[in-house]
Image 1 (cartoon, rainbow, N blue to C red):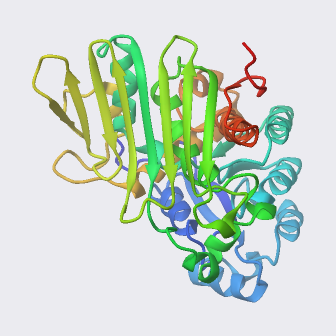
Image 2: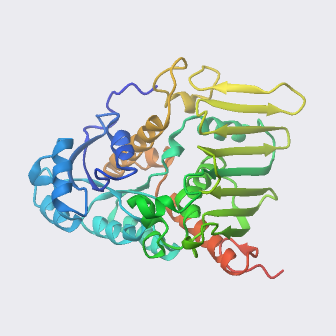
Length: 399
């Protein structure tokens, strides 16, 4: 059980790039990092493209005025000269900046926590991966939903053979908040998400579906995609060539099949992220609107609802329990779990503790590369006429 006691020797000196007053996700990052105040301490930041607004915001967060910087370059330079300089930085900026800032942070000797998707291309992601290895630094990716602990229960039950051989994988992440173009014009956060120069080659595949895809990999680490087919649409025409709706069919190496539906135009849908894994004996289903419950359906038996915090759950799950079964956990707790594991990974990396690193389950650089590869392959399939594409090579299937 997590009770707030320190898991590492001291809090890591942490900074943010982006995540300012008008950021959609900045508060989620801070909630996650600071939930266990023994893991991170926010000491610096370049919070906003408007330096004065960023400084005002940082001071209101409790950061010293002289450590609220106008840009990440000056922050890296000045913090490097301090004995108490930053050790890790979160990048909570639009997609098109991730590669440049991550590489600069690694060059400055910093560990990195980056928003998803990590980069535009697999080649860039692999370059980051190689440089992080050379520098001996951790790169974590904030797939925040993956900190929901019942996903670990799904992982454990599948590994224990509770559902038999996996046959079908049903993934969905949809909402209706972009059913019209209103927010494209009014919301700063939405504007860049539908601009290919800033968002990259996709909208909902990279912004939504990468979360659910990573979660499926966390649940089923042994399952590898052999090929996929993506059909994507721009129902709001001004978003083309970026999609606001997509369907992805997937074939796995073990013969299983899967599909992902991702959409920002599922009108009336408040929250539609679901994962259903169907095996030869039983099925498991989790829905992020009911994150404290896991549906377990054995063929020929009554359905069971497994509840977070109960003793019958796997020990790997209850190791992350925070509030006990009577009390509801949610997204803030999921982010806290994610950030805590990244802090433990950074501490282990600095100490050369490979055993701890190998046991940790968190969204690391490999997850970041895999997510970029998946999005890139989906886009390539769609652009070639929604054809089957080999996953590793990303080329059309010819036989």
